Amino acid sequence: MNKAKRKNILIDLSDLKHPNCGFGQIAINYSKRFANLPIEGLHFFYLLPNCYPKIHSKNVTSVLVRNRKIRKWFPFTLPKVDIWHSVNQYNKLYRQSPKFIFTIHDLNFLFEQEGQKRQEFLQRIQQKIDKATIITTISHYVADEIKKYTNLNGKEIRVIYNGVERIDQQEGKQPKFATGRPFFFTIGEIRTKKNFHLLVDVMKFLPEYDLYICGKDSFQYADEIRTQIKEKAVGNVFVTGMIEQTEKIWLYRNCQAFLFPSRGEGFGLPVIEAMQFGKAVFISNYTCLP
Image 1 (cartoon, rainbow, N blue to C red):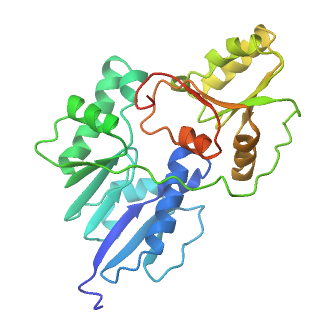
Image 2: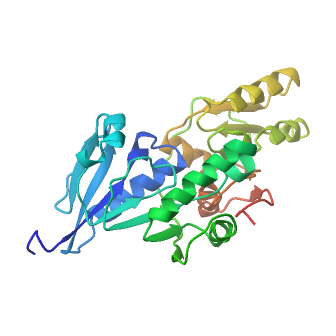
């Protein structure tokens, strides 16, 4: 097809720099899917973090963002495209394009923030909605939240569920921290909204089991959980930090049950991954989880 006639679409994949987090996994799935789409009329520009290797495909042109501040304040340095797709609400780079697809995964800040801070987050979301041609989201729960707290100004909102990679047939690797005892498992960024601290008290009544809390632990909340474990002398709860994909698979495959007491989820990807392995899943009754 004539290059002049094809549509150029930019996909902001900035979250590839965090491959073991939820947004990182979603970005990986996007990168694989679009690179292999057999559509002659579309060409994709991948906006990649500087640390990520270029993706080679006849459908894809990789654009490395070496200096985000320059790109943010001088958007004309970004590629000129027909469609700009911001794949989550936190993507900060944007160049005015004929069409703008804005994907919102959650409005968790409504529960995490208060007062002026909460209003500022809501205002930022609204500004992007005002620019958008169409809004997409990942669950009907989130769609209802968007309709309730923002002004769509008559714009369409579509629910497109996250794709979930089948990992239950993949090889796993036992983590070094595994004790060999029966265990429960949970995973996610160790932020306050995840409610993981509740599990510390639960595990006091289950001394024959261990609990592994896995995920990014650079937040104050992770330190609070570690302090709670120490002060309450709960020796069967372990905050492990980030784990590899193969370790995650092993933990899903070998755990007695998956525990997920989160208060703020737009989709709940780990819940579905645990179900792939046929595990009992214990969840909270908040946001999209029910």
